[in-house]
Amino acid sequence: MAFEGLTGRLQSVFSKLRGKGKVSEEDVNEAMREVRLALLEADVNFKVVKDFVAKVKEKSIGKDVMDSFTPGMVIIDIVNKELTELMGGSQAKLAKANKPPTVIMMAGLQGAGKTTTSGKLAKLLQKGNHRPLLVAGDIYRPAAIKQLEVLGEQIKVPVFSLGDKISPVEIAKQGLQHAKDNNLDYVIIDTAGRLHVDEDLMEELKQIHSAVNPDEVLLVVDAMTGQDAVNVADSFNKQLELSGVVLTKLDGDTRGGAALSVKAVTGCPIKFAALGEKIDALEPFHPERMASRILG
Ligand code: GDP
Image (cartoon, rainbow, N blue to C red; front, top):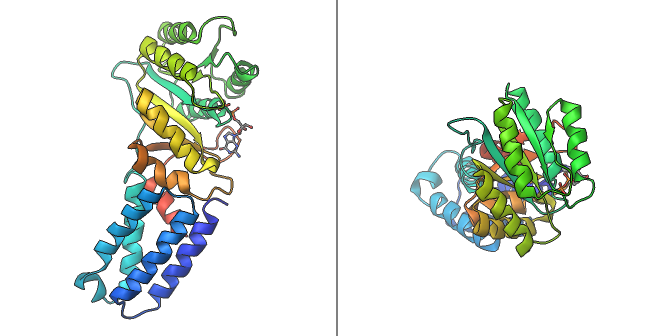
């Protein structure tokens, strides 16, 4: 289960606070020391933890909270609100083009779940009565085109592919035209990933970007990789201006670092969470629900 360690640690901090009829400044300091350690252990970015704890402390220490009937509960509520803020506050919705089709470009490192997520997103859009097109732009990973075609077939969403001999920029352009010609309202472009962020990858993504002028650039990152996922998001964002992040593999036993750090570090909201390999295991990301889940 994701966040298990973090949830357990926070619950034990808060059960101590909740039990107290009166909370002293020293109690708050002690609780915040423990919250700090719990977050660091969950692989949350160091600076994010520092700012978070400072904010919660500032709001918790004061007459209003300490003189309340249930100071422990009030502090838990403050933590809940700040966790929600940390993840973006409210749900960041998918952009929509003024004039269809809305173009969504998917980016990410190999293995993060980009191709799978493209299929899941198509399914989600289809459920909302849209007509998406999947574009197979990952021509380097041998199985990627086939994988997308299989996904498309499974959910009855068309897949535009030109094989692996034509440049991804050309594929993206023609894919977009195909969507326009066929009255499809969303275009999801799967792009190539590499094992590491490198110049060739970025250059190709920038070229695709200028060829199709996407409404959304979604970076798919593997939540299991913790701070690495955040660093990847940071470097992509510096080169490509992401509009959102998709966190995958939240069904695994990820500690929480990526979910809690990515927005604060990159400024880029998490728009979707993937919780499994199945085609319908993608959900819009709700910061407030995630915060409640983390608090257990
Ligand atoms: P890509 O190289 O980024 O296109 O990655 P793929 O889409 O091929 O995914 C890599 C692996 O991760 C595949 O085995 C997927 O089934 C798996 N995967 C993707 N998303 C999730 C997820 O949310 N949870 C789990 N458990 N596995 C996932």
